Image (cartoon, rainbow, N blue to C red):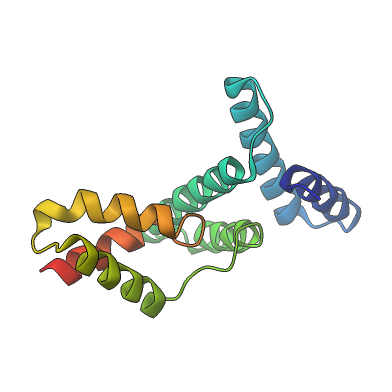
Length: 147
């Protein structure tokens, strides 16, 4: 079953189960996927679908931060629920230790020593851990290890 089929089926179940948060979240996801599909002019690959889901997660996390800064805990909680739903459609995310281990291996391979090597490290790290990590998290860990 493809990602699109799974999302469609889950959306049907959310509507039948009268789950408003899950329903709106999956509708937003389907709309994003459809827009990207129209933009590309073809069906999306699973990797492209995962990239879109990761992008939505990143946007929701930024929204959570802004809502908390604005004192809107109710909206932040709703966004957190959506993030959990989106994570259901991604492969198991790597732990902090696993990310750090992989980045240390890459730093050793590239003989990286300074912040100037950040771009090379990030490119290789994101290729190896695609769909299993958020880029911001990898960037923060890499900067910490290089300093």
